[in-house]
Length: 257
Picture 1 (cartoon, rainbow, N blue to C red):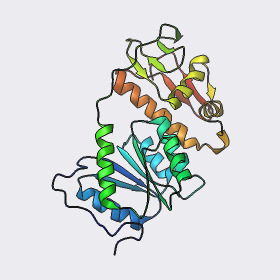
Picture 2 (cartoon, helix red, strand yellow):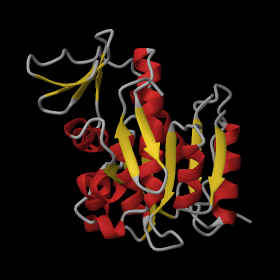
Picture 3 (tube, rainbow, N blue to C red):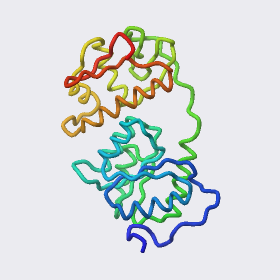
């Protein structure tokens, strides 16, 4: 029997597999609903992974694994909710598609989710054919080749042989390759460049990322740092000399790590 939160309309036959190769993460504690959705999406060619909480998703990302789309329940176990996850994901990786799901979605709820960075907000019960079509459309947009990295502004703040633009939005490597930063990455790097060679306390970095540091899961900072390092290597072919100091914080070192 179909889960009550999934429309009985079922899925449409699709020999072309509209979601072929897509990596989709389902986040929430409704195992029955996720089982139904996962089966339908896998029929369309997607690779699905289920996570019972936001923390489980963060651990997945921290291990260096990735996904194309996160399908996210608004109500989540633990202290946080889907909105805080959307806000965090959008800050650290704006290239990940985010689809929120909620029961009896009100216009205010939808507006809040979209304003935080969600690409779609779907009301339960879900209509599987509509979900598949929307995911296909979202994936086509996400897979458009990215534009060339922005040119480096004239004014620079130098940190040894790595540089950060004066507005903080562009990182430049010793070989003069540039990387456009996300809002959260910019917030992390600005205090590190300002106090280069010195340890910057974790709490100070978190305070630079959010105006509600008391509500910020420390695992999020680890995920953000990990993904920033990986993005730098992928885009520049060099390692950012950003080092963790156990029990204290991070520093932008003189030498590659």
